[in-house]
Image (cartoon, rainbow, N blue to C red; front, side, top):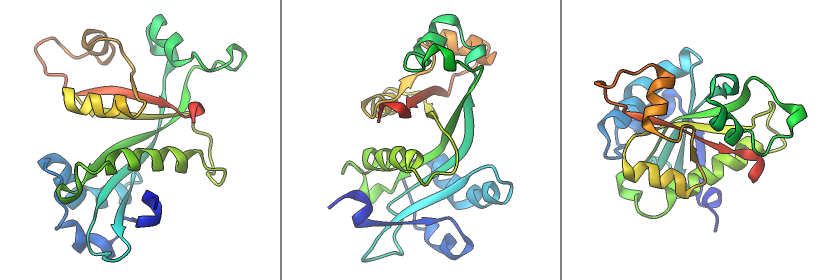
Length: 194
């Protein structure tokens, strides 16, 4: 049975808000976002939050994610990174920026971690964004992944690549001084590869 046959997808709403208080992924920042900030993102049209619940018990949130419109500004990338991002785009179709969907937040409930649900969720998002019923063009998925080895390996195992080859290059791009911590790394997935 596939992921989407096992679980039902819902959009965040006031109706589901009570269930969010039971959602804990082990990361305080993510838990707080889903409990307190997701509604504001919805109201301000900054992102849409979705969750999956088991068909047999829809009061349990298994995993959640937030999507927003985004882009990869190819014209602002260093030449070698621009070539890497555009490697599967025919030259005559080169644009200064490419449409993307940002996975702003993604989390799996602690009770369901270690079962491959995070990878299944990413596969679901990839297929959902590229579905023929999608009403807009989108070439890339992007994320601001926590800058740690475990998170980086997870996204790399799911086909994502770092937008910048080094932290130094990324710091220069975003204008972050050397004494400030680089808390996240920009990563992307080229949807044409599906």
